[in-house]
Length: 579
Image (cartoon, rainbow, N blue to C red):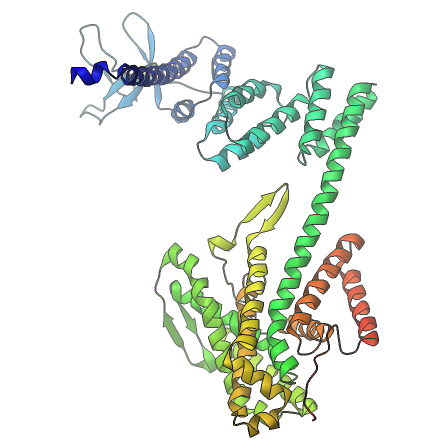
C-alpha cells in the first residue's frame, strides 16, 4: 500500500486540494449566511428607520434566499426583541412547542444559536409579553427590492432570465451592482444576453454621457426590442439637452432595431403563411380524394371535419372524468379513466387515429346509403350532400349542444420556440409536420399499395376495371372512407387551434374546394402547391395591407382570374377513360 501511495503523489495532492476546496466553499457559504442573518439582526435593533433601510439595502450586493425568508418572518411579526436585565436588546426567533405557561424556546437571529441566560440555561419567552420587531412602508419597499434581486440567482434558467429582464423595469441605477456581480459568474449565454440588455437599459439613465452612448450602442448591437420605446424617450431628452453623441447613438440603435423588426415580420409572415397553407392542406387533402379522384361534390366534407373534432373532444373527456350527453333527449353518461395531468398529455395521441377511424366509418355509412347512387351525377350529389350536411349538423347539435365545446391542448403543443425574436408556436409547427406526414401517407397509399392501384384503375376507367374483375363498389367505398377519414384527421388538429362546434366545418368548405380546384382536380401535388401558395399570399397581403378583409378579397380575386386563364388548375389530370 505504501508503495502505491509513493508512486502516486499527484493523486494524493489532487485529493487534498479537492477536500480543501470543499471545506472552503462550505465555510464561505456558511459565512455568507451568518453575515446575512447578522445584517438583518442589526437592522431590527437599529436606532432609526434610515439606518434600518441602509442596512437592508446593503444586502442588494449579495442577494440570497435566506434574506427573503427572514424578511417574511419579520413582516409576519415572528422576530421578537428580547431585553435582558442589563438592558441589552437581542432579536430572537421562537422555536419548538409552547410550554404550559405559553413560553417558547428562543434562537438568536444573528446566528441561529440558542439564546442562553447568564447561568447557561435556555431562555424561554412568551410572545404576548415581548415586543415584536416592526416595519414601515419605506423598509418594506427596500425589502422588496432585495427580494426581487434574489430571483436573479434562481437555479431555474427560465425564472432567472425573467428576473433579469424584470430588473430593468424602472431603470434604477442602484440595481446595477447586483447585475454586474451576477454577470461575472453567469455561464449561460441566454442569461448573459439578458444581463447585457438589462444593464444597458438601466445605463441609459446614467448621468454620464459616455455611458449612455455605450448603452445605446450595446442595445443596437443586441437589437433589443424591449428597449425600443426607452431609446426613443432618451432620444427626445437628448435632443432637448443638445447631447449630440447620445442623439447619434440613439438614432443608430433605433435604425438597427427597425431593420431587425422588418426581418422578424418577414420571417413571421412566411411562417404564418406556411402554417395557414398547411391547415388548408390538411383540410383539403380529404376533399382531393372524394372530389378530385371520385368526382363527388361532397358538401358534407366540413361535417366530417366536425366529426373528427368532436371525436377528439370525447377522447379528452374519457381520459379525464367522463362525459355526460343527451342525444335526442336520452341521458347518456360515459365514465372516464380520470388520468389527471397524464391523461391531458396523452389523450391527443389516441384522438388522432380515433378521429380518422370514426370519420371513415361515418363515410362508409354515407357512401353505402346515399353516395353509391349518385356517381356521375354531380348536380344530384351536390344537393344530396348539402342536405346531408344540414342533417349531420343537427345531429351534432342534438348530441353535444349548440354551443362550442372546449378541447384543451396537451402540454407538448401549448408552448413555442423563440429563435432570434421569431416565435414558432408548437401547434403550428405540429400542423406543418402533420400535413407533410398526411401527404406522404396518401402518396404511399395511392402509389405503393394494391388499394391505391385499384383506386387509380377504377377512377381512370371504371367499366374496364370491372371487366378485369375489380370489385368497383368496394373500391368506391374504401376510397370515400379514406377521404372522409382524412377530413376527420383535419378536425382533430383544428380542435387544437380553433373552436369546436357543429358548424365549424362550414368555415373551411369553400377554402377546401378552392384549394383543390386551383391545384388541379384529382392532383395531389397540385393541392399541396395550391394550399401553400394561397396561405403565403393571404398572410403576405394581410401583413402588407394591414387589413385581413382586403387581403382575403384580393386573394379570391386573383384565384378567379387564374381560373379564367387555366380552368383546369395548375396541373391537369389526364385519364384514359372514354366516358
